[in-house]
Image (cartoon, rainbow, N blue to C red):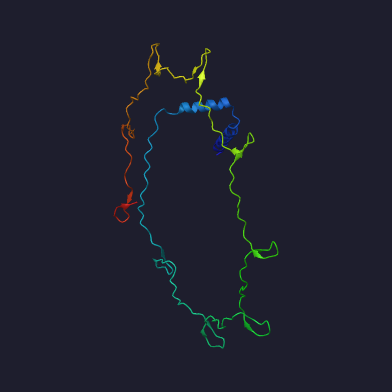
Length: 255
């Protein structure tokens, strides 16, 4: 009994010391332990992970049931209301009779007035004042007012540079168009824009010191097909086009 208890106590103390020492372990020691763990790992390739396949639900659909008296019977949603619709009633004198909303029996009233104590219908006043024309009376005599009409004739622009009035005409530009000229050596000659006489240059390269035309590299690597090797044998990779189905009652149908 004692050796087993002592051994258990020693193991507990060792684990506690390792846990307490791990956070304060020096960085070189941590790196050495990490390298030792990496060296102990096997260089063999990892196992191939099988493709995940969705499980097909084979549990048939269940209907809701209940057992109020210990007998299982189908459960039907909310009970059907079998209470007939009730009409509103009243009993003012102890006799029950249908309740009907009161109908307004008061006739429509017309607006009236009584300015002299005699009641008469009220009618909105009608404007009996005739339309008035605008008038004026500059000399005490009333006459219709008419807006003044401009009787001054249109005037032409004139000028009188020498005291003689003459029509004014806008000056016309009589200076002829001038051509651009230059005089590099003191001789005036027409100015012409310089024409580019440098021929077009082709791109070249000289990898070995010999100048040769530069041509863009053409991709000569053939197109590669996708492959896989689930069991170590290389085979073409084809996308799974299978349609998931199920057969709860023995009849195959889409899932």
